[in-house]
Amino acid sequence: QVTLRESAPALVKPTETLTLTCAFSGFSLNTTKMCVSWIRQPPGKALEWLARIDWDDDKYYSPSLRTRLTISKNTSKNQVVLTMTNMDPLDTATYFCARMPNMIRGYMDVWGKGTTVTVSS
Amino acid sequence: QSVLTQPPSVSAAPGQKVTISCSGSSSNIGSMSVSWYQQLPGTAPKLLIYDNNKRPSEIPDRFSGSKSRTSASLVITGLQPGDEADYYCGTWDSTLSAHVFGAGTQVTVL
Image (spheres, each protein chain N blue to C red):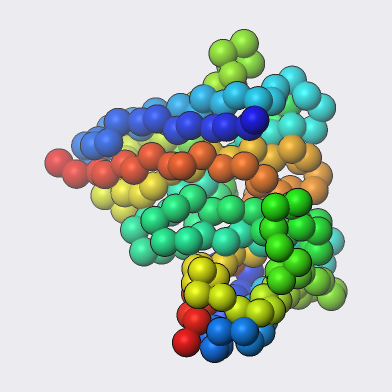
């Protein structure tokens, strides 16, 4: 059974750095073409893709957030970590991680439940 | 402003059909596979359609997808109250080197 679970501080202050962790089970990021994406959703708004890391450690970022994001993986721990610097109240959102079993076909077949992050002083 | 354009809302009576469109360009829908996601209130998105028209095994055949040139569509037939949700299309954009989603379509069962 494939599962993903996101974790992060529920509250961060403006200008701080947010660290999001996606712990997964039931698959390996060593598998050819496997990847994991991060997606966020501000309250009442649409999904926004943030970043993706591939089985071969290729990394892709949202063009609008590229300078603030860093994605990494720990294959032995089955974790993907996303850091976002210089947090702003507009970054208040629910953050999801999702498995993408084939980077070329580009679909997210299993999602975590999400973790809600509020940015406020 | 989303790269992929979806109608904000569609509605129909129970048992009827709704079609949700997703319009893009040659750098995304025109050259990449499209997927569709259902998000029920307060829950994570769920994969409905992948590779333009394939359904995961647990998704009923009331949901179908298609693609033509730079547009894609999701059709829901035999509409049920439990289908009330937000629906998103998504794909890869080769110019942006980024995954893109539509702004979402809210389906209301009258």
